[in-house]
Amino acid sequence: MQQGSIIRTHRKHGPDVWQFRWSEKNRSGGRIYRKKVIGTVQQYPDAQAARGATTAC
Image 1 (tube, rainbow, N blue to C red):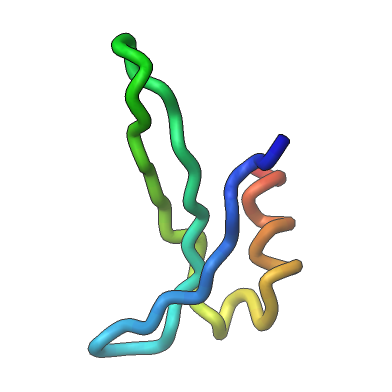
Image 2 (image 1 turned 60 degrees about the horizontal axis):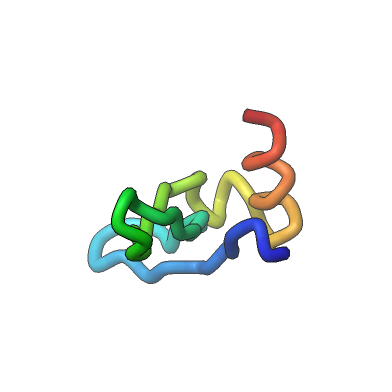
């Protein structure tokens, strides 16, 4: 089972950021897509470092 994904997102101003994306089911069975910014590419140079930051929380 997939536990979400880490993607690198471009920002208009400032450095790119890492985002954690996942989905949840609502009461009626539909999907709700969620995302959260983990940090910048300067803080976490690669996706593996960014994923490690998500498991630490």
